[in-house]
Length: 346
Ligand code: 5GP
Ligand code: MN
Image 1 (cartoon, rainbow, N blue to C red):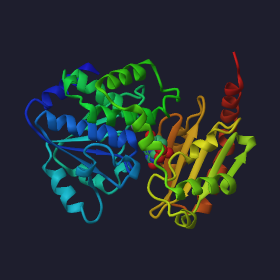
Image 2 (cartoon, rainbow, N blue to C red):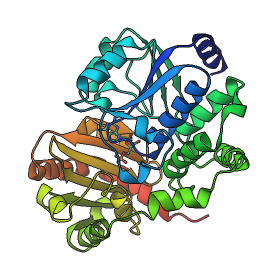
Image 3 (spheres, helix red, strand yellow):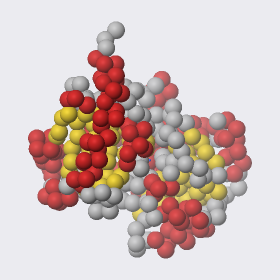
Image 4 (cartoon, protein in one colour):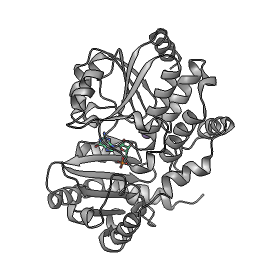
């Protein structure tokens, strides 16, 4: 990893035109690490800009630099194309396959700039010229922090950068409860706190910023839509377009719902199947060693981490549910083994 940091240091020696992009529907790690890296590069004298391949939740708008983000859509496509074609360097943060940035992927693929992937998801595609890739890193924000440190520029991490990095680390570790919460996470967070961030405020901005409709939707989903399949240690929701509309669901409003299904006693895998305008989207979570990365790859053109992954389906909602249900028997044994691991006390 150190040689990679050194190589990147050389690339950043002279001022460059830089584009930073991240995955579809950016979450706090995706946007936080992008904005932190962008602000850092601009402080270093580069011309850096973040292009998001889609919109993102309102509860991330507090991040410094948010108002300068170019959100890719039909209206901004030409501007995004021109900026991307002019870039010397294109950083791809928190994703590892161009399919994760939709139509913007083709533009990035054809651009002349050197592509650098900085990511912590499993099994990357080979699209970048250069990878800083570590699946042991709890968040891409951790990799950005380490990178800035390796560039001997830690003094440039101000409160704004530190807040963005903290938000990414906090959310990707499930508020420091997932198994990826290692010693390094706490050590880096301690360093961010030393810079003067208000961790409690960041938590509130992200988690205590719900609309009334979002909470009512959560109540509806939990009472009407949760399906529990004890035999497969699996629980899931299927949400259709009308139900999203009924609760005026906004980007980010369904985030976290799948975790409620996983919180059930005896459940090893949880899934949320949602009818979006372009395709049916699936979100997976798991406990112990059951790999939803593998499950999503095997069945739904997806991927992610061992315990959190996503995918999509071009089938309609009903047929996607059927496909999901028909896949389960192939994993019955593995689900059972992991249920037993979970039940084991030492
Ligand atoms: P979420 O369920 O929160 O949308 O995503 C969980 C994890 O899986 C995140 O790390 C996200 O980047 C990844 N992920 C979500 N959807 C997809 C997908 O369609 N393909 C791949 N490869 N990864 C995904
Ligand atoms: Mn991440």
